[in-house]
Image 1 (spheres, protein in one colour):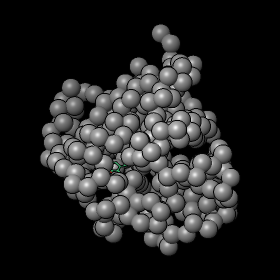
Image 2 (cartoon, rainbow, N blue to C red):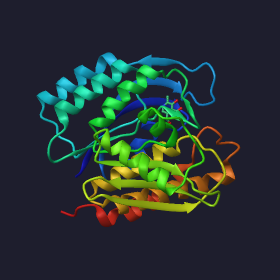
Image 3 (spheres, helix red, strand yellow):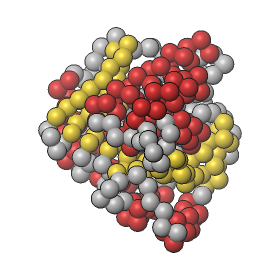
Image 4 (tube, rainbow, N blue to C red):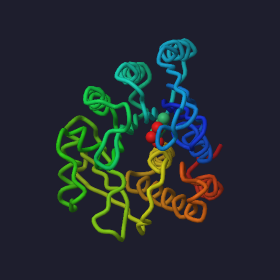
Length: 283
Ligand code: PXL
């Protein structure tokens, strides 16, 4: 069986980070190991008074134990990380567990709509930029891409602008940058990727639903990582991730009021499991 290790927080309520990555990647028939970086009572996007227990100090012990028992992974996938120190420890994890046969996906989940999330600073961005240099794939949105490149954020862009940003992201050192939540007009939304080895761009779009939903980045990055792990090309992985994320957003619309804090991806897991079967290596 293919194995992914994902390193991110567990927000006990609110449907993001590990409570999305675990079920989504597992539904794709991939074993999912986790390193929880922190435990929060809820995510930070709209809930007040959440608790936060930092688990940074546990990560080196987990890593050392895993090294001693010789664990290996097909992919390493990180998302929301809570501090510069945590990013440095994750960077060390890459040194210990990255091989010529596996790949690294970094989702620099730290900002949206032109602003850093609560608690993130410019210093954190610097550290995250270094982590992105070590990744094979990064999946920022336009706000995160702008922070990574140190350029002003704009919502008013065209295809050439996105291509230029992707090339600049690859120049940071990441072979396959992907920009998520791209929309050139109000009709379509999707993702655009750059294969810097082949100097090729690829993209995937679906009808735009004008709703902001928490956790869609978690869904996209998890499915994308799973799809690449199962042997799909960059274009295929993009199509799979864009379509599954859009399906989840559409499925959430009837529940949007009661489920304001997260996306109802659970309604689409059966579909994901069903069509993932064809890529799962058979024994
Ligand atoms: O969805 C990303 C995410 C993950 N973890 C925590 C968050 C967020 C986004 O706000 O608050 C704790």
